[in-house]
Length: 352
Length: 125
Image (cartoon, rainbow over all chains, first blue to last red; front, side):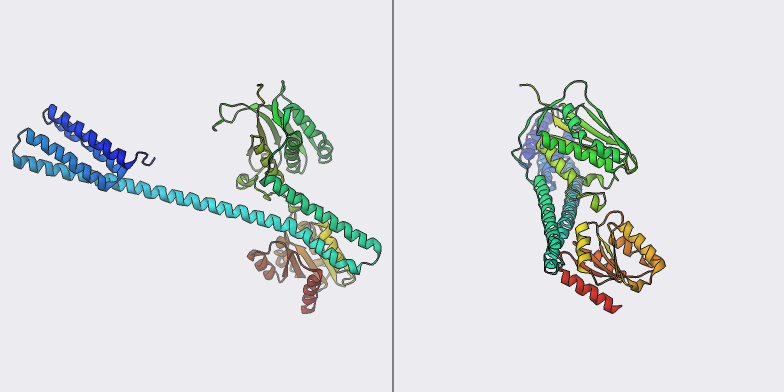
């Protein structure tokens, strides 16, 4: 840790300390133990205010020591010799400590610079992924729209014109959906919430996905909590989150498998909320898992580990936005080849 | 007998390219991902000369990207003329396309431009 005391406070404290030590030194009859104590104010000032100020305090301390020696009526030559030696010792101490302090400060600056550079690189990476995603997801339908419009004059029959118009309409809808998803991620406010039970949410989110799971030779196993788990939220949005996690789990098991859905109450150890309880829905699969280098990016818009045709890379980022707006969080635990576990944590709806 | 292989994960995009080149190729086949494109090329490498095959492919596709497939041309010893379409034409995309002897056209493009690029590549042989 680096200095937390202001320079003025450190100097003031050092002067007071020096005075106390000098008085103690005098009262106890110029004792060497008290002389050694002068290193404390010198070290204090050097550490908190730098070498230059440390030297000033060393001079003050030497002066105090010299005054004591003179009051003790010691021989002048011996006193001067001793005090000069003491001054050299104090200044050397301040110098060494000052160098150490500078070195630590340099290290801290380097560390901060490296962290800033890493953050910047990460931001650029996110923007790059975002740009590539937007370019692909919007560029292709735009191309289809402009191309279809160009081809209309060359249509062979009126039916083909209708087909082309339909293609244009579908692509416009696709672009609209992408933009809506992006806006959902970036700006979400004013959602209507109501009390709900996470057990009901888990069941309703699963209903529509059972046929899809069957088609993929997978099963969805719902394990509700013994008692209701009350939270406050927008049921449609939270259903979207859980359905999205189940769909991801199904897609992560190309040869089938089991998706487990568990409802319960959990805490968030290691965070500022570690003493709070949250309603938790855990979606776990035994699929391909997530690579460690992909894990920190899975909630970024357009980041996807699936093939381009299988997902836009917006599902998890939208889910993240929804849960965040509900005051909750999504936690992930996964290893390549060992499945993935997503836990949605939502604040419990405490009775008033 | 020139054959056109269109590879794009967007069905409407494939339809657009197919419609653009209707009547200009004897045969047109479609691939919805990189793997399908690769297997079309493997089949063609046994049945046709490379000069009789033309490929128009997207880059970002499931399974293998268009550029992954282009990188297999040397291993297949089959080098059909190729146009690569992409919405995100970065330096790597240009370099890899060029290395495989292809031409890159950024999306969105006018169908007339795509026709011109393809005609130019066909004339160049």
